[in-house]
Image: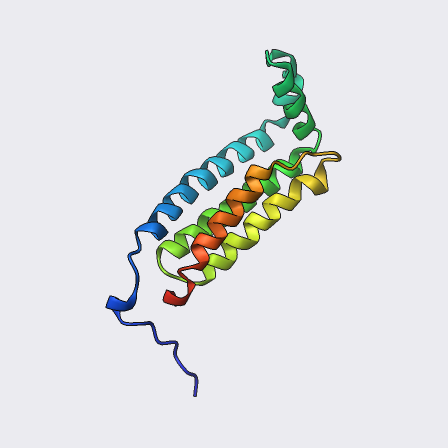
Length: 145
């Protein structure tokens, strides 16, 4: 006979405001990531052909470096941001599997540029934010089913 996981009584569950705030930020960030990487993947050639229109040389070099990864890089990013969004939606619904979707997609999003772009400078801010959000979500795991 299978044992069903017992959730703590309602009064033992902490205030879920922090969880909801984390989810809202994830919805915004992952939603925008999904849209922007998806659009760039669809019109990759347009961006590649019009790099000269970017006035700031430093930004142009960074965009050119990212575009060098190819169309598949942008589609993979869009998919991973979609998984991250889905994970946050499941976390919002207090489902533990959402944490695993979210954490795995965030880790892969950190690794993906290094796999596709030679010499890509990994921003410490991305690593820090990913770890903070994963840590923040992990604090609610024991209250989820």
